[in-house]
Structures are given as structure tokens and as C-alpha cells.
Length: 345
Ligand code: ASP
Image (cartoon, rainbow, N blue to C red):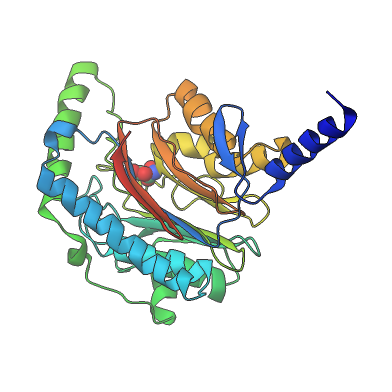
């Protein structure tokens, strides 16, 4: 082949690789080099979502709730609103929906109470706020954001967090607001199983994992990232147990230079493996794509450790990832012209 023909072929190849939207194969996963104007990703919890217990009506209700939440966040983003506003408002709608284990519909602890945890992070500044074990705050995600914006601290818990909520005019409710029969029945079942296991082994039984935590990560039109997570934790939890959801770096993380992440699953593992930050660190230090970093953490590290769950993530270009190693994860995302809502693999 002549040198000039070779030069033309090389030029065409370089053009194809650099054009917006060109796709590259990176370590077995597809990463697009196109920058999406905005992207919003949500989850409604990962875990054992038994297909036999999922009626078509129930599945439709979950999908409708996920779509409604995405609609709220997407409208804010289309109108040029901030990633932080989109995260907060989207999570509020999931907290208000009794289908999910966050806000109304949160699981019960061992004493028959609802203790709520949430965290919030701004990727532009790496400011963050979190609350743990609150019992009267209608939307813990709003309180987590207020801790970030209106207090000198990052994490408040229990009665102090509630006093801060009242002082700052955050909506409070009677603890009975969070009651749902389904979660109450789940606690009774968990206690019965616990009793049986304890009498068999003579050891305290482990907390029982139920899914339904909610989370949202966003890239807005300005290129800013934000992340939030909200949960009632695990059914039958005791001793003021906190999971990963209110822990920045474990359940939630955002940094404009890498990604925004929100996790769901067996919180003790997500704390020990610092899951949300580990994804960002792999991107930062090892230059992995979002797809490869999230896959490494969820499908490799967590699987080896025995940590069940998943996460949602978005990077600075609006690439999204939603890996999980459990049976299912309520999840979805929207980008201009794209909408995906799924439960199973
Ligand atoms: N990660 C949450 C916790 O451990 C529970 C969940 O995501 O379902 O509190």
C-alpha cells in the first residue's frame, strides 16, 4: 500500500476515535467518550427480591415510583437546575413513597421503632452532610443537606440531629408517620427467625437484610456531580446500629473529578470496604473507567468478601453504572433521550 493511502487510513482512524460519541472497548466494558448533557441515576435498594413474591401489580407500582422519581429529577436538570437540587428532590419523592425503606415505609428496629439515616455530598466542593438514627424527621435527605449547608459539621446523630432539624425549620412528624403494616410484619418474621436461630445455636442471630434503601446520583448541565442516600437501615437492627448509608465514603461519595456514588446492600461490608470512595479512588489512582471501577468493587471485591448489594454511579461525562451482586436492584437512569428502569438482571 502506498504511503499516502496509509496516511489517509491513519487519519480516518484518528478521527473515528476522537469524534464525540465514539465508543471504546475498555477491559471488557463499553465506555462512551461522549459527554451527556445531564444524567440522573437512582436506586430503590438491592437484595433478595424474590420473583415469586413479585406480582405484576407490585412490579408495575415499583416501576411507576422509580419513573416518577426520575421525572422529578430530570425536570430540574432539563431546566438547568443543580445536581444537588435534583438529588434532594428525587430522594424526597422516594422517601415519601411507602414502597421503599426510607422515610415513610422505613423498616423497624428491634424495639419496633423507625430510625432513619441519610447522607448527601456535593461533588463540586466535596462538602458533605449526614444524619443517623433520627426518628421524627420526615425527609432525612433534606436534613443531611441542611447539616452540610447550615452547620459546621458533617455528621449528626439521634436527638442532637433532631434538635438541629427543629432549630432549622426542617419538617418533623410523629414517629407513627413512618409505620407501615408490611414492615411491621417483616419485623415480627425476623424476630421469630432470630428466636429460632438463637435457641438452635445459643448465639445472637445476625441482623436480617431487607432491601429498599434509596439513592440518587447526578451530573448536571454545568458538569457538577452530587450524590445522596437515605434508608431505614436493616430490619431488627439493635443498639443504635448505623450502616453505610450515613457514612460518607462508604455509602455515598461525590467528587467532580471522578464520580458520584450511592450504595445499597449489607452495610457492614460497605463500611469495611469503603465502597463508594473505593470506586472514586480506582478512577483517580488507576485511571479506570467508571464501568471498570464499579465492576471491580461490586462484582469482584465485594463478592469475595461476601458483601451482598450494589451501587449506582455517574462520572463527569455522564457515563452511568448500576452493578449489583444480589438477585435484584430497583434502579433506573435518565439522560437526554434515554430512560431505563429495571429490577432484575
Ligand atoms: N445499606 C443499608 C444499611 O446497611 C441497607 C440497604 O441498602 O438495604 O443500612
